[in-house]
Length: 327
Image 1 (cartoon, rainbow, N blue to C red):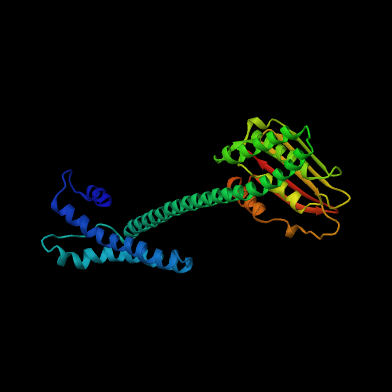
Image 2: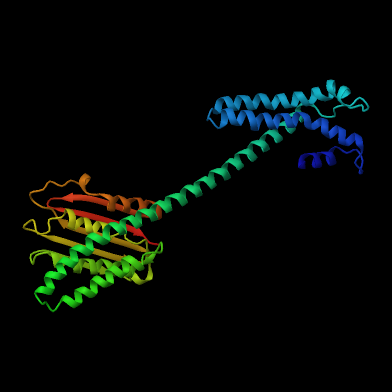
């Protein structure tokens, strides 16, 4: 419709549009319509979408000349039969008709590809939404996986502490209460305050000290202004849990869990070291499980191209190095 409106103005012999102008423009469009739809419904569907680029180029080149030839043929042979009441003489040379043909075929190709591009964008948005929903589901599953085991283990430790009538019992009960409150109530949003996430980790480490003997060294050092930033919840804790699960706590002559977290400007750097049991062969490929796999997928989803993660074994230690650009 837009093409007809423009060309009827262009072809008009006088300022006022006459019947012959309308009929001439309709005849002129026959070859253009055929060319456009052969391109969009045949060549693009059969060749271009299937990545047969050479065949598409050959077909496009043939169609380009065919449209110009059909336009010339329309006015020389068909116009007398289609509109016998009018006398038409094609006022355009074959080279001019090639220009019309090129413009219409090129525009139709661009419009078709633009439509496909928008469809791809919409599909990508839907896929991204599904990935985020999956990540949220995995996060909820991770929380459900942490809560019962952690609560049971620490209640057992607190029971032993209470029977000894230790003065530290109320302090540890308070830490456990704060930790559970954070896990249940404060991690519902996609992002949480980095300071709260780190406080949760500190409480976790302090409570783990209850289960370890006196020779075990659980150390942590957190530096930087964490209250200025936010982070996806439960990104760091699975690595720390892993250090207790696979580490040499209460099993070797050198029992260490050493955590260092540094926040500098928009960057978070974490280095976690844990000892490995002497009588157990642990390789990097065996380190993992649901929690670590969950973290890796959420890192890729929420911090794509903005993080680095290295897991490696060094002598009797296993080391995790994680860097995240928080913004």
